[in-house]
Image (cartoon, rainbow, N blue to C red):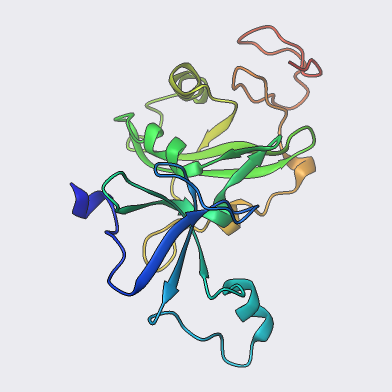
Length: 212
């Protein structure tokens, strides 16, 4: 279990810790933050790129990996995502991988990617792009109900036939995030996405302009 769920612990003469991405303060066991490391195995810097080096390695020699992780009780580290993929919704830090892992528990889901998209009210809003094993086996509303009912979902979801992956099989989140804010649909608190000129949610009866 440890081998498949963690990346292990720090090797001798190498320091690792989890820090708050905003304050740089050390975080306790079990709390998610940025994984940083320091030791003989850390590079001196990027070749002829001082700005890139200073942004990656701080004045104390800690390499900021950009990985989100947490330290377990037994001293191992578990990677939970990428810092650049973290969604900041109304000041709340939301970790896409946690939502993705939950959506994968639905046996009709083949693939899923959760991203943050521009939102006028919260800065960023949650959006899930889902590939079903059998297209048409679920409606968007059924999927939204599944997520909302068991995860406190506040976002939107949609289906696609496939997702654009990189060379190692990971989805290209930067392509999904390239969305014009004005092109995004209004989203009801129940998860329904208003289409075209709709002003009343057919699920709960709430008007599009009403805020919680």
